[in-house]
Length: 171
Image (cartoon, rainbow, N blue to C red; front, top):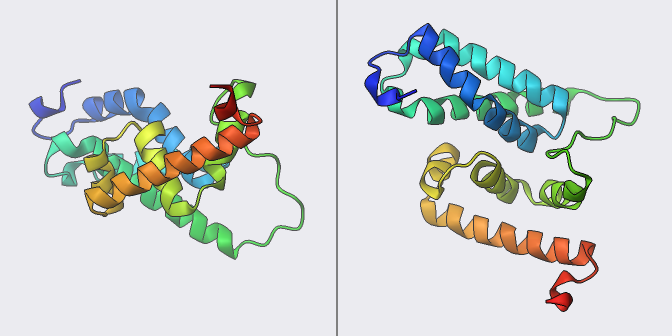
């Protein structure tokens, strides 16, 4: 689908775009919410809100960024709502980013990152956004995104080296 050819986003074009982009949306939502059910709810609500307001988008070239911003706002809404909830039992184990068991240490290392660093990693590496796009979505300077990305990757490298028993020693 070529977004630049559309003047307004039609129902058919929107559905086509969502079909292509839904997996990335789920990864982003899961990175924020850490639970499969909540991530799916966030994606569903973002898709619905995007559909309702699709004619308000001024430039169809920014559909991906616009929809991602809606998704992030929905994730924040869910997080705020969940802070008010008090659970009496232990929550079930978190769903995995990946299907391979080998990826579990990476998943845990990403979840253990501070929130500001995790947001950058989720958008950059699970969402596939550039530094510039990530900066726009998070409303941060590009330099800040770049610095946070490097810092997060360094922390992940150390965490994964420790998990593997000092992988760096085997180089």
